[in-house]
Every structure is written in structure tokens, then in C-alpha cells.
Length: 229
Ligand code: ADP
Ligand code: ADP
Image (cartoon, rainbow, N blue to C red):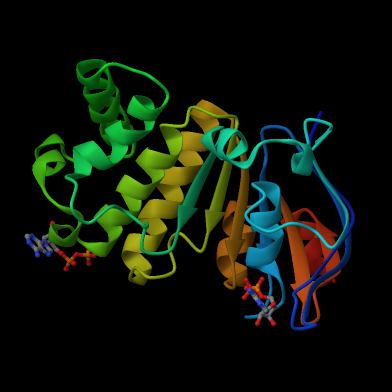
């Protein structure tokens, strides 16, 4: 089942930069699809067109068959988990509250939201006692785990991850990758993951989309298919 479809999508920024050039691909439900390629090849732009942070200049991005540009952005985004490099946590809220904010915003009561947040922190392997810390008091790897927990709190079938593990050291990164694969085998989300690291793409992706400078799709297939070429 197709979860996300890019249909002849082009994004030209107002200054004339073509970030994505006639991209067409389909992303299957419940898979990890990795966009990989050098800096500036349009990975982040592609990802942000899924939650309408960026709108295509032409073409369409369809989520479950529906053009995302027909959805109200806040509603759309509430239903799509989003994780970025350095986690993008609120610095003045504790770790637990960073995660609890999401269920609170969808109308949960405070104590249920905090219980749910604690569950999610456990899910991503963060020790419970770190819940009362502020983000600056965590290691880089721990912060990324909180970012993942917050994205899972949207309880949505789709998770967008933009270089989520790039700022942590290689050993922690491998841990986080393993954890993501474990989570995925349990949760079966549709994950779209952006990285410039080919090894990471091959390790995580059910499918890998290789972009090249100028925003064109160079290859799209399983890691084995992509490595063969
Ligand atoms: P990547 O994620 O692969 O590094 P991006 O999608 O961030 O690539 O950027 C693709 C291209 O679009 C780059 O040339 C970048 O400089 C340009 N770009 C990104 N955002 C903007 C913007 N808001 N305005 C103009 N150009 C942009
Ligand atoms: P990593 O290499 O895993 O990212 P760090 O070297 O950044 O780890 O941190 C190691 C440990 O120190 C972590 O358990 C983290 O919680 C703790 N720590 C890091 N910074 C702070 C801080 N400012 N206050 C309290 N504890 C911290």
C-alpha cells in the first residue's frame, strides 16, 4: 500500500534555486525510505514537502492519496512525527514535559499526558530519572532519543527524520540506529529518513532514494539494488 507519493514534484525557491527537480516516487506503507545524497541536493526540501513546511512549485505530494496542500498545515503536522538534528527540544521545559506537550496539545489531561510521555521515554531507552532534566543536561545521544520520543508522541503512522543522528559520535549513532530498527519492527511506521551518510542509508533503508546535486533522483531501490549500480 502506498503511503506517500511524489508526483513530478519540483521546488524552485524564490531566488531561482531549483532544490528538487521533477521528483516522482512512491513510498510504501510501513517501510523506512532513506533520502541520501550530498549536501544541497534537496533532501530536506523533499522531506519538508511531506508536512507542507515547504510547498512544491509544481507537482503534488500525496499522503494516503490526498494532496498535502489541501490539508490545513497545523492539522497535517500534528499527525506527522518530525525529528531533526539536535532534536529541536524546548530548552526551558524538562525532558518529560517536552514529550508530554504533544499529547497535551491533542487534548489529553495533564497527568495522562505525563504518563504517556514517561512510557515513550522508556520506549526509546531513556532512563526514567532523566525525565526531570532540561535538554542541555543530556548528552547528544540522549537528546536525540527524546526527539524520537516526542515524534512518536504524535502517534501517527508517518515519521519524518532529518539527519537525526548526524550530530552524535559514531558509537552512539550505531546504538540509535539499532534502536530505530527495533522500534520499527515493533511499530511498523512509515519512516522517511534523510542522511548524507551512505552507510547509514544502506543500514536503515528498506528503500534508498539517491538524489544528486540539482535535486534529481539518480536511483531508487533496495540498498542491494542501489549498491549494485
Ligand atoms: P539538503 O537537505 O540535501 O542539504 P536542501 O533541501 O536543504 O538540501 O537544499 C537544496 C537546495 O536548495 C540547496 O541549494 C539550498 O541552498 C537551497 N535552499 C534550501 N532552502 C532554501 C531557501 N529557503 N531559499 C533558497 N534556497 C534554498
Ligand atoms: P554522549 O557521548 O553519549 O553524547 P556525553 O559525553 O555528552 O555523552 O555525556 C555523558 C553523560 O554525561 C551523559 O549520561 C549525560 O547525561 C551526562 N551529561 C552531559 N552533559 C551534562 C550536563 N550539562 N549536566 C548533567 N549531565 C550531563
